[in-house]
Amino acid sequence: MRAAVFHDRHDIRVEEIPEPAGVGPNQVRLRPHMCGICGTDLHEYAFGPIVIPTVPHPLTGAAAPQVLGHEFSAVVLETGRNVATVRPGDRVSVMPLVSCGKCYFCLRGLNHLCTVMACTGLSWDGGGISEQVIVEDYQVSPIPDSVSDEQGALIEPAAVAAYGIDRTGTVPGDTVLITGAGPIGALSALYAHAAGASHVIISEPNPHRRELADAFGIATVIDPTEVNVPEYIRDLTSGIGVDVAAECSGSQAGLTATLESVRGHGTVTQVGLHVKPATIDPMHLSNLDLTLVGTWCYPVYDWPRITALIASGKYPVEKVLTEVIDVKDVVAGGFDRLLDPAGTAQKLLVRV
Image (tube, rainbow, N blue to C red; front, side, top):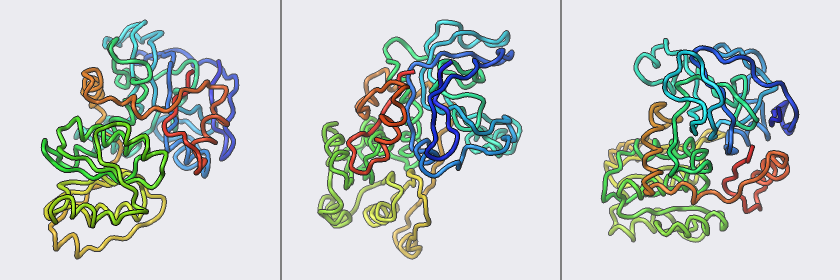
């Protein structure tokens, strides 16, 4: 079967590999339809292997070369004898995290913090940019006819964004600042609007991303290279500041802007991943009684809720999508374009 396989940095090959072997009693064989290219995938391509193991993973035994793809929708081809949640022909979205179910965190429902967590498409025997993959039954979540294959492949990043906003404690009527309008920042803005925010402000230096975010029609979009973000926020909020903020850029400038723009007793969530250390002023946290929260992935049980919100039309995740490409073009037309700082690609899906 055809698959996109990571071998090493700057070495992803679309090649023929064997189909996955027999389905276990609690497993499901899938035919992926659409799969997103995530920022994690881009980091692996540019700088890896980072997350992708070079020695057998302690939970799954997987190691490079690795079939990529952890944001995907699919159709069920076959189920193990104990699987009762789906059947062949069902359309599904995949929650890619694989957990042990036995560690301190798993026993408390915090499976996304599993001490030996693996991920389909990164540390598992298979991934979503392939013609077949076998996953555990708890990873598949049915999607209704009202949710497209494209939307189904966007549920994973949509869940990341939703968790970031949920961790701020956003309630209807809040003002929300989002720094960074990449895929996660854009999805965070859409989710904050769906959650009832009275005003969403997006700060983004890239003109192409600002244009896309502005087209949503749900936010005020500003250029942090042209305006002082905290001063702009104070002018906008009668000197008070926004109620909550989500830092989605993974940059020092974005983090500083959120902390200086949120009101006293407000909350900032760090959603974007920083590739190097950043600094904060702890006295500022104390003086304003602020809460700074980290987020990692999402609750593994959130797929049905996110799916229902998308199906209702209130969370139009498809608005972040800029293009669907064929798997044969995944390197030059996908990874290389997304890493081009002058490029206009935002969120790409791969048609498998």
